[in-house]
Length: 205
Image 1 (cartoon, helix red, strand yellow):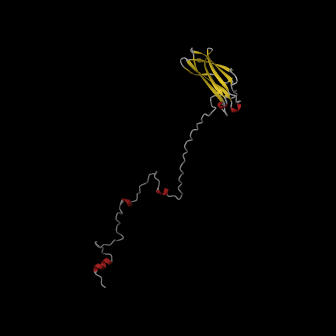
Image 2: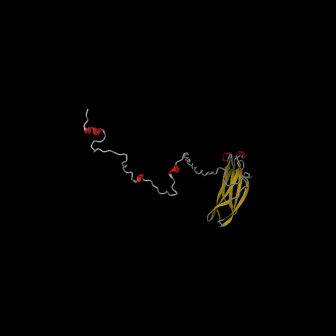
Image 3: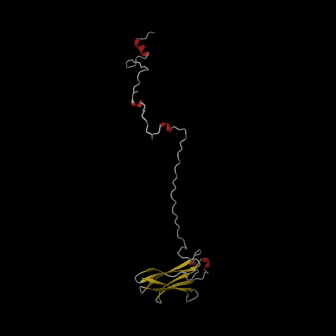
């Protein structure tokens, strides 16, 4: 079978569809080989720039574990519990002259006097017999105030001390002077109170 000259040229690769036949030679210049991309930078590197080989290592990279940040511990607020009355109960006996009266407030012509009275150390120390605890305040020998507290099983603390805080409002005639406070006990079977103690306090308006 005889082939035409055109078919033979196409078979040998000398002719491509829609293009003029051409041949590429091995010694032909590669397109773009003179571009800057292929050029070697022979400029010396700054001393602080590490060479790429410094990052090639066979050692495993150790990643530090995240540091756990502990929040600050909250401040512990200790509440003031029962019994913390600002009084020293060491060696104190019930219904005794344990603390004196004090002036806690004054006005232009009056004072407020306070007196704590211990009437039971705990529930076991109370005999169960009810009575009246009476507080009185005097100015210049004249009674100007009185308060009564009924002491009974229901008014006595089981575990801690029981205290009555008497507070008297006392009008006074002078800019200074002395007030007298009397504490008495009135038993249920008696009609006359028994004086327990008397204390005095100075005041100045």
